[in-house]
Image 1 (cartoon, helix red, strand yellow):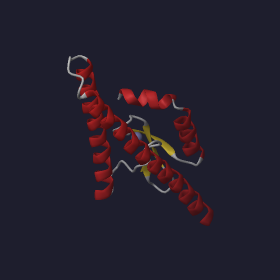
Image 2 (image 1 turned 180 degrees about the vertical axis):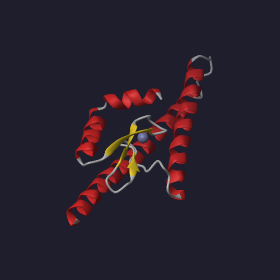
Image 3 (image 1 turned 135 degrees about the horizontal axis):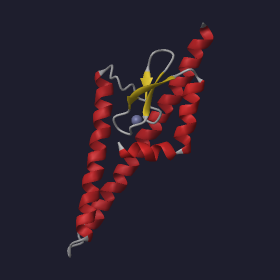
Length: 135
Ligand SMILES: [Zn+2]
């Protein structure tokens, strides 16, 4: 997926992947269906994306729903962006602001969800570290 390359350039993502490997995680050939980044297998067997922090080998109904929600949010953003483009190319610009507002809202929802996923990755790493310490 083309989005994967963009994410790769993000220093924060590189830092997180480096940390995952340092923590003993294994980089897999499988990639995240949303951003195309390689998935990592943690020592406890969980499989996560460095950005979404999700177990993509979906193990529960909730996981599958989260994946679907991300997918829908992206579709909404794409649709709104297309409508903005259409508005710019037509004489009637009345729809421009409403669709820009949709994009802004999507952006806000996404950053909230990403922050939540980042927390999940951090928590997972802490948990793995604790489990290692108990051995
Ligand atoms: Zn991902």
